[in-house]
Length: 170
Image (cartoon, rainbow, N blue to C red; front, side, top):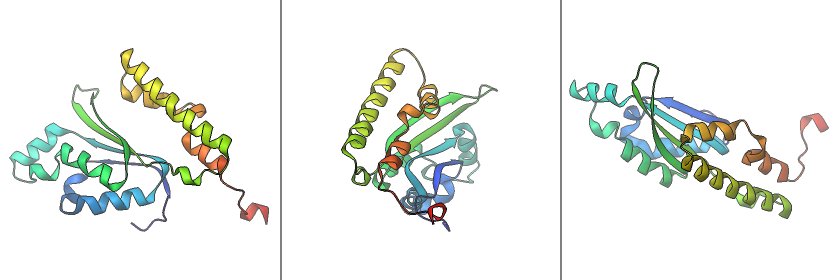
């Protein structure tokens, strides 16, 4: 991809894996390269539509197998991988696969920031478990994180880096 490393905050695609099936590991490695640390990766699929394409012999099962796709995410470097099914407005069911590019602890310089980052990770895990126990979907819980700066790993990481000279300081 013609983008710099750590360029995008979020990457989303729908019905793309069957184009990448022949070289899925290399494609996912390239996606994680352009995703910023802490960035979110989301894959959406309508499995019924894909099964129809398979029945029509336009694609093969191997090209869109969600389990194969998930198994390729971790070796590519993703973490917090999960799959969820949601119903659309027309009662269609969609499959969502979420993954995250990990933050690199080695980039954290300030011990207080490291402690805040680790506390943040533990609080997120606790809130996710509690939310699931209370019957909330992972999508609802994740949306809560996206709107709450308290659990913003990327902000904590950026605040901990040594000061850099930028064009505005020149």
